[in-house]
Amino acid sequence: MKLYLYTILILILVMINHGSCDSTIHVGHRVSLAIPLEYNDGFIGRAFLMDYGDDTKQIEPSFRVALSTEANKGKYSCSLEVFLGDVKVWNSGHYSKFYTSDVCFLELTEDGDLQLKGPKNRIGWRTGTSGQGVERLQILRTGNLVLLDVLNQIKWQSFNFPTDVMLWGQRLDVSTWLTSFPRNTSSFYTFEILYNKVALFLNSGRLKYSYWEFKPSKNRNITFVELGSKGLELFDDKHKKMAQIIASWKVQPVRFLALGNRTGNLGIYFYSPTTRKFEASFQALNTTCDLPLACKPYGICTFSNSCSCIRLLTKKNHEVSDCNQRVPSRFCGGGTTQVEMLELNDVVTVLKDAPKRINVTKTTCANLCLNDCKCVAALHSYGDYGDPSSEQCSLFQLVAGIKQVEKGLGLSYMVKVPKGTSYHHNNPSVKKWVLIVVGVVDGLIIILVLGGLVYYLVHKRRNNLQGTNNDT
Image 1 (cartoon, one colour):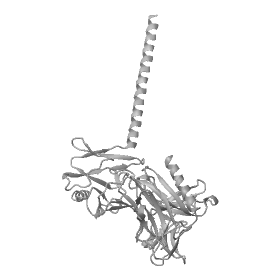
Image 2 (tube, rainbow, N blue to C red):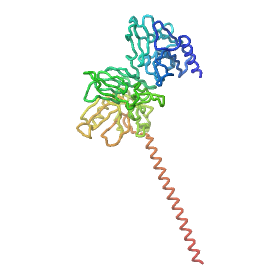
Image 3 (cartoon, rainbow, N blue to C red):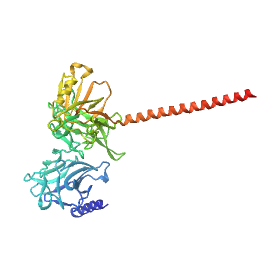
Image 4 (tube, rainbow, N blue to C red):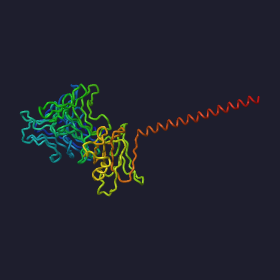
């Protein structure tokens, strides 16, 4: 309750000192946001400075601009943010957070530079537009936050610095991307615009693997993409005409495209007047097990969309890895010299773009990984229709995105482990079937026993009656 009261107090002070919100801030304007003296985990303080439209007079939410402070890892960060309703669609601190204490200032200087400052005028973020004739900061109807000169020419715009959201009307050129950062992991996701496709990638350190892609038909190339009312439009490099569209299946116009920071899934969203929420009209991945981090490392996503942990056992029956404890990622120079490849039955990884060899056997594929210090897993396949002449081997430096598949697909996924290791994995769906079978068997046994007892008692009574009749 204390945190909420503090946030409301900040908003009231800002409105008293600076008046009601509009869509423009002029040079010389400065606003401050107080920061708590003590750290409160989960605290968010937000002062809305500008908006486009009036939510009370329209059906759909409007864009708003806010100066925000947020508790993060024992410190407070300060940023400039753009919201569409309650959805954050842009953030100045998306890639590099500005940490400060006591107070945070937003200032559009007299020479046209938009800056975030801390105590003693320490600059934590800026647009770098000094001396370019900037006259005002404005939020447009598209949600694009812009700095304009007296001739209404754009000198800086948030659309040129995409984060994890792409708005209607926004354009991304080749070699640009959206990025999202899941919590409690060093890995992150990117949605990238490439010359021949658009694709989703899982990034871990210097490692990079794709897990979804879309290529234009007829091998057409891409110059840029733009989010239109019907979906994501891809334009070619010849006449800049639309080459393809990743379409929304809803009649309502598209409002934004987002890369989820929890799942890494890509979605296109519209506003539903019925639920008064933004809902997905397209998702790149519709199955949980197709997500790259659906389970923890060394975990298998099963047909029931639950995670089954691989448990590796040494000769001494000591568990060395499960979904929480990883096998060493490198097997050279770390004291683990005796290793082998352990084949996991009926599983595959959703990760792609790993180094690949063709026309190699499964044994050769395993040896290639064993002889590579950085390799931790390998996928061997027989190519299309099980053709042995098209055998392929992919080598991975990351054990992730593993999912259960049907038998007989000609795929073999192998993990590098210390020599002498065996494995089993806990499959919740298997456990469920075991319980059902055991229950049925126990029921049958009880029925047979009771039936036999009843038959014995009835038979004995008949014999007694017959004996009595004979005596009589």
